[in-house]
Length: 221
View (tube, helix red, strand yellow):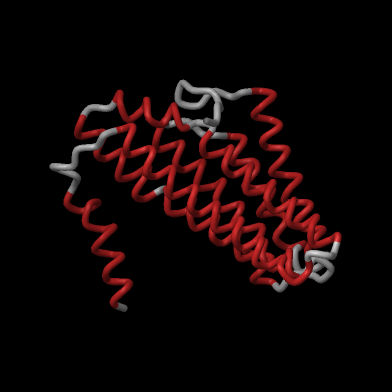
C-alpha cells in the first residue's frame, strides 16, 4: 500500500497540479530517457546470458540466444530510429507545452516501453533455458505480450509526441498479441522464432519504406 501511495503521488501529482516551473532541455531530456531504454535492453541481454549458462553446448540454446538478441535489436531500432524527430519536436514546442509533452510522452508513456522490455526479458530467459519445451502460460505471455506491450507503448508515445499513428508498430503489436495463445502449445524455440520473424519483418519494412513520423525518418545513431 505504501508503494501504491508513492506511485499515485509521484505520477498523479504532475497530472493534477500541472507542470509549472519545469524547464526541459530537449537534447538532454531525450538522451536521459534513451539511456533508460538502453539499460532495460541491456538487462534483457544479461537475462539471456544468464539463462544460457547451463546449456552452452546445446545448439538449440545457442540459436535461441541469437534469436533473442535479434528481438532486442529490433526494439532498439524501433525506439532509436526516431530519436532525432523526438528531440526536434520538443525544441519546437513552447515552454508550457514542452513541459506537458515531457510529462506525457516521457515520464508517463515511457513506462509501457520499459515494462514491455523487462517483461520480455522474463519470457526470453525461460525460452532460452527450456527451448525444447512449451512455455508456461506466464512465460509465454511475457515473451509475446512483453514485446507487444513495447510496440504498443511506441504507438502511444509517438501519438503523443507527434499526433501520428505509427501504423507499422501498431500492426507489429497486434500480430505479437495473436501469438500469445500459441506459446503454451508449441516448443519455446518455435514461438521465439515466430516473435523474431515478426520483429525482423518490422525492421525490414522500415528499412524498405522509411516511413516518416514527426518529420523524421528512421535513422538510428
